[in-house]
Length: 259
Image 1 (tube, rainbow, N blue to C red):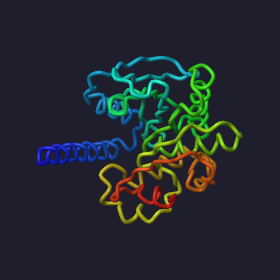
Image 2 (cartoon, rainbow, N blue to C red):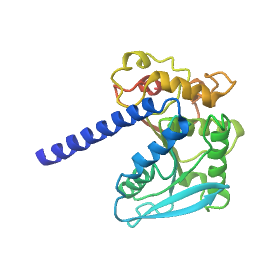
Image 3 (cartoon, helix red, strand yellow):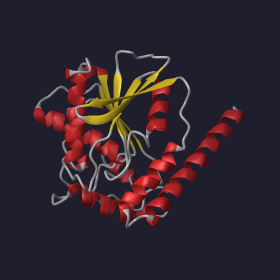
């Protein structure tokens, strides 16, 4: 038990170190988005890939995509559509490769990630349209039923996953089996108390930078638009949701207000 606790504590410290370094990078390149994207990609591509997971690049609905297929499949009939984080303005299937591969190995499920279009070049609804197109592709060309699909994402990707569910419900289309959101950015208006109380505690996100990314993504639309900030949408009738968030994150209120 002691050895397990030591390993958990070591991994937690490494994770905190990496998040704090990424926050410093975001601050350093705050006025040069292209340079930050390059640095973010280099930073995350250093992370090791787990053994026993095959990486297969493909095109899904016209989007660059990648599948991570674990050698030991425990749920061969299921698939996870993963929507990466990055404040809607950075991140990619390559920078998130290590994370998706590790999830695939631990769950024994196939994970597929897409490069959805990023703001500010492509504001809302570009990312949502791409997520919807990928979901439709899995149904129409991938051979999956809606009940075979899990939607998952982190940060902006977590919020995007919730927005995808709201859009599917709005269209009257079949909803996925369930959804998982890790620290979902569900309130781009950033009205939650944790934005203030955790401003200095959050190891990754800076409220001022996040506010800039929010406006990039929303464009001319209000930040509380329910398909931009799903916290303001009607979440009734959605499939089961699993939400995770840390108590020291500025996004803590985004999750807790959805309970």
